[in-house]
Length: 340
Image (cartoon, rainbow, N blue to C red; front, side, top):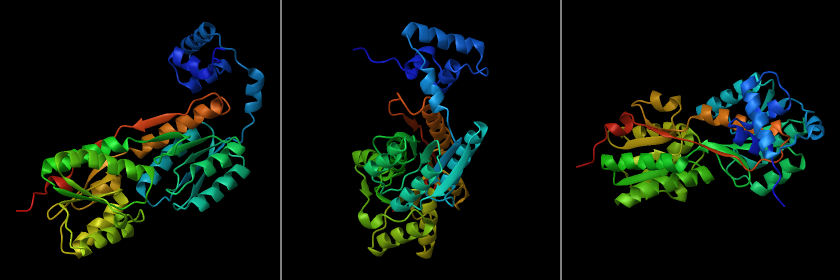
């Protein structure tokens, strides 16, 4: 039996987004006629039949969307949330925001509360110790679509930076400077941390450099966590050529701890990070960071969720979108020179 033609097939054939194709089949007058003609021609060519009765059942919505992030102090999460807020507002949705504080149980409770309030969909930056099966059971029981942001788990739509590539760019830069030992510190075990370490190792170890990344270098995603992780490293009498923080907010603690030890970032030790939030450029000296573009992550994640909602969370394969990173080189690495 031939596979059933879906609206996703129509949108690809017409060269438009799935949400645009959905608006055309529903007769939305906001779509230009030239676009509508392309969609209708694709429908005729593929033999797609619109199930209007099912669509009508799906239109019973609360026009609310839940957004769950770790907290709002970290500029990465704030920039992401603002992008989501703008797009959902423009689409006529109200947004509910919850903060998991990176605790899976608190996250589960927030999701349950939002489902009780009949949100149409969820955008989730998951806690590192999220159990994917538990999450799937919770949301699938209520038929609430979920798009994961920044941290990936299998089985869900996902939008985030291409971490391995970004870390490889950073590794190439540090190797070119002459860094022989690089400590990767901060963060809790999660797919994004694994990807960043993988990229650093692939780049640096191929060039004969060492990457230090051990359990005692993990920490809370906070300035205090970064300071503590670096303190544990230096207390061992180990001084790497470069420190790479898991995120910009962790790097604040790295800068503070270095200065408490009489070391100057960018002179005595190269320092770099990930995210490229406003923290990076405002450090003294300004800090090299891999840009992950949180507004783009938030905007693209919202687009994928809208795709799900446009057709009632049905007939769409898992959607993945990787945002291309950029390495922003600043004085915290550019002015460093190998020790004599």
